[in-house]
Image 1 (cartoon, rainbow, N blue to C red):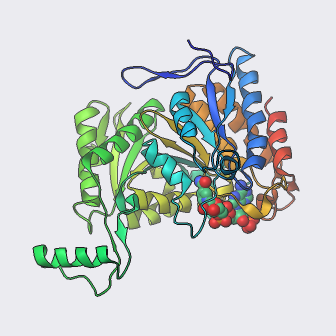
Image 2 (cartoon, rainbow, N blue to C red):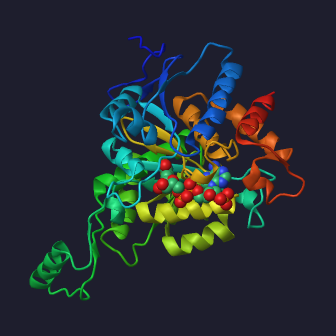
Image 3 (cartoon, rainbow, N blue to C red):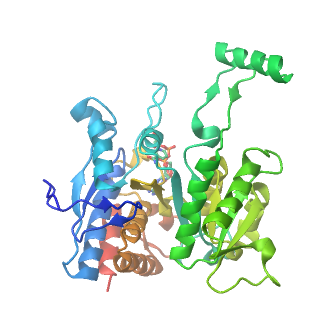
Length: 408
Ligand code: NAP
């Protein structure tokens, strides 16, 4: 394979889109803005230490920095250089810190741009509890879910026009003239596109994920009782996909005999979104993988993160057919930038997801277990320490080092 300036080999994709991961892959990282450099500096040694410990030097990531955000503007004059996008495609796998979205410049979020340009259509957010972390619910340990949120469609597609704009007025006239639909005067208008292709590729990833990991169910969460041809269609297309592509390995909840799921099959459930918000509070143990449109997924993943202790510990990934970018789900938290204070847990756990994605499960497990032990001993950053009795508060980099020390 071709060697690079980074010293490793490239990950490649075969004709079916499966990854071939060499033992020494080149992986791109974007430090991010604000506290991004703090959390990346704490995360990278944890990932490297776990890989060394798990594989004794036979596997190693060759990191290459990719520019985005303020650092990219300083060095290239552009916040998201084309070279960065090309290199993420070349690497197939990358990890990033948070990026600032400039307010009032009219520029779209860099994160949204990255997802759109690379067609990273599934936003994946695992939510699980680490014992010892303060939680607002009585049984946070019952929460163990992975949200697959559709990333490219729905009201987030950016098709909207301001109140009073020429476009909004034209659209109002078009609707009235053609469909006898009257909008409220001076209404701003947004459009909610949802397609069979967009839905099915998301649900396909969610079911494949559940099957690979032996998880019990995939729940389609939608608001189809009200929005029949978008959210309702999401439900319909989701079941269609399960039937057409995974007939022998899935079963619809409505087809279960006496409520029991056959050995080795993933149960496909469906829930209305508002009811699901109750369910995840009252009966979280009944849900495992969740597949849902963009807006529902945005709300649900943050609500679930709150159940297990907040965004400081919530990892995420944006995954398409040709690339995957793993990222901290919180923002740049600029007031803590450079203070070595913020919780790096979200980025470290995103790194755990990345190792899992590479098929390096042993290293991923080492970090998870070490993080459990570290938090279990009350060694945490300020955000968790301020809610815990008897915590030993440490800074960002010290928390990372404590995880490495707990890898035995
Ligand atoms: P934020 O950066 O997430 O920070 C809000 C607050 O959340 C912080 O002040 C802090 O609370 C807490 N927090 C966030 N990350 C934490 C961590 N790792 N450890 C502990 N506490 C943490 O939200 P924001 O201030 O609304 O956004 C700032 C910038 O980030 C904006 O430009 C926004 O567009 C951008 N952003 C980027 C991404 C991304 O790149 N994926 C995502 C969201 C926002 P306390 O002050 O209470 O300690």
